[in-house]
Length: 480
Image (cartoon, rainbow, N blue to C red):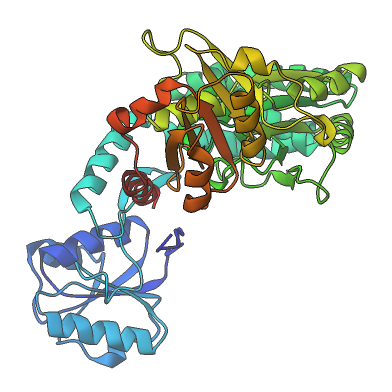
């Protein structure tokens, strides 16, 4: 993030604008909407600024810019058509510790002016950091169309209720849940539709009575949502999973959950890492106990697991622990690593000519024992076998498949960091794959796919680190 987004209160604060033309006038208009005390320095004023001066909205210093004009100013904007003057303003402002914006010159600017969507008191600001101003404008147009015009009325109405809600619902989690229900429900819709505020207020009173009754009747037990985070790409998270993340008080996550996915959680939610790494981290029993403990404290818990929690994610074990204590839970499925990584690698897991069945196998056994699988069945042709967490056991898996009749020329692939910008795919055969993986230096998390479908990778591959990086950069600019 190149720029730190803030909203600055300028009501009654002195701001200097250097320049008297149309560009300066546009900046002055924005500053006046923020109730700033604007002084314009310019030998002459254009028609729009002259009209503002005539109305008393701005002050005017009819001179060329001098450094002393910056004395006492909160902000400065250089908007002349002379680069040397703009640079001088920027230098003098910087030397005085005054934030400065130079129009159309981000290198000289300490801050930039975003595209603004004004639904006061709700404000949305969009910027590309100067990289793509037309794209920024288009985004603003989309947001203008998307955000209701009475959104500001809704914000003001809810603000008028804050003291009452705080008095009636003394528990902070209870208040947050009331507001979530309020904004998602018919009361907010009534305000946005312009219905009589007094009528809506009476409905709010009724809703508060119901909320008091509901929260008073609760035993204090929270709830747990078991959420599949997908294989890494945050774009693969389901809408339901995103909503649960935004509502959770606590997020328990493992090492396969990407930072990009974790960043989608509510900012004030507690985040607890419970990744299981042999000999260094939480045991499954510890995680089960923690889930129960947090729920009994009345927390809304999101148990965020890489891939899908019901496919080698031990989700069933965690739900059993919750069920034993009578704790409410829900399951939000995720895109499992097999489907996500194979798709991003251009490997169809089934194919009429190559694979008529598909098997998922865990790559390691419980308590590091032998892998209890039917190797003879896995060695048969016309199928695809996906080994989760199979990189460590790769030599054993290959040896067992060969020993049980699989030909050495059977195709196979390993996908490292699947769906992420760092994804790498190594293909080969059962005879060559171990050497190819070692030469590439692949590491966990990786997925092993065995079957003739992996030969299609070279033909069907579409996802690249370069494309993923470009997409990530674009997403970062859109959120800037």
